[in-house]
Image (cartoon, rainbow, N blue to C red):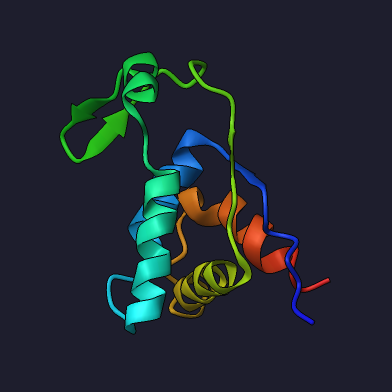
Length: 113
């Protein structure tokens, strides 16, 4: 039986943005369907946009960090595995960055105990 600890994971605005950037863009039909649903759950609605006041500053995005608490996002086992694999790959290729750190702890290190 698989581990479903990831269901109901609380994610900050930064974690949601970073996750959106590392989700796979290719795969089989079933996987892409799940990825699309997860992207929708991670995305920001109009009310969140209004509160966060996103500003594009060159190649960076800034926002009002105190505007929203972390959001509880349901992430199923298959999606958690895809996220874990993407983070492990970045780590193995020595391409992990500071913004990946908390996600790595939540999805990779919490799975290894």
